[in-house]
Length: 224
Image (cartoon, rainbow, N blue to C red; front, side):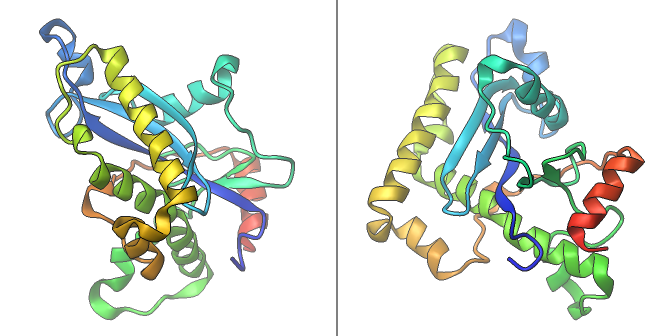
């Protein structure tokens, strides 16, 4: 990780279909037009989840969930130690301890593969490296969703139980990764191909602007 020797993991959000009472559905309808719960997770570079905040309405923006995770002490968010940081994508606010890519510059790996145009300049080089490393959480989401069929067709449980199912299956995901991944075909496929990302793991984010002093600090980390 030439650019990222002090990076300790990646943060991203994903959606799981939700069974919601009719009177609550409006808040859970996301951009795909169906009820979902929005989930924020942190993972390490072994594809293990180290934090999850599940059960949010599908219409809630990722940045709001992120800020709530940081502000609410009862969530016990694992803040990075001094000098360390997480990778986040363009949908998250830029602040100390959380490094996002350059905006208005190619970022997602398929964008670099499309058209055979070589990487140009320091910002594209940084974004390509950032995207390659941050894809670990997309691979973790992909393995997790592929393994647990209940996530693809959630039963008519209470919203609290649906949230608990997310947390329980992520816990089982971690157990398999740490103790039996050499026998698991999905983890084995990811270990054999670091660029493998299951299609359902992709989420498109919106860009947000940041304060100039934080941007300058991020540029120091980026090596700009």
